[in-house]
Image (cartoon, rainbow, N blue to C red; front, side, top):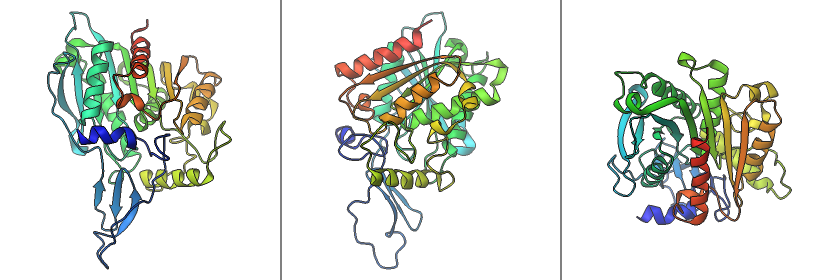
Length: 351
């Protein structure tokens, strides 16, 4: 319960300045290291998420609690865990609503947030959110537990998302996964994620469009919930703090081990050429924005750029004024979060 109380204050993606949204990687209070002891000397302080020491030891400060798969009494949703890629310890939690009929239901591939460095598919907050979403939308949800930085810097999470998508496609065939093969309708395949998970979903849709999917499958829709997008230069915002942008660049470099600058298309889709936008591998896109999210300028620009790119699909933008980054995870029962959930449910179930 303590972690559930703290999370609204800490947020999920590179929090800074009292819950307004995203990154920074603040270098806060430290315990004086023992002289010459690399196991206590700080290499990178990514509070409130984790601290990495010079020895390579990583101490996560949040997002480590887990709950078991179960039959949820509140929603009637059943869940169970599966292995996606045992060699890389990539797993997923499947959610199946209780009111399923003989007809098949949409399949939703979901990616959790947490700045690419904390949280999992098995933490209490994501277990509760996916139970609720599966029940309200009537979907078979596959919540992916991808590898985290810094032990597995980007592009590991992107590779894991691709492996998870291919696993879903392969296991919807008869005689494979019992839930996917019996209840999953791949003609209604959706991908979604919040914060860092939204970034992962976008990059997955790009790869799917460029490389194609097995059996000619297609992603019907993609929901990006307060996605992590940003670059070195502020977009449509005249009040961005240069120190904040520099700190964001440092933390992005930490997440990817210096492989990609912050204006790489992985972090900043606005750097993509128009031809790449046109090949985005889904038919519909929903982008949500929270009014107090510091990432909101890039999120809105993503939506407007996509609409003007020549991409042949349909895009929509949903905004919640007065709320911080991924507020809906910790305020699930509030009217604002319920309205956003209803928008997501309608997006999935629209013909």
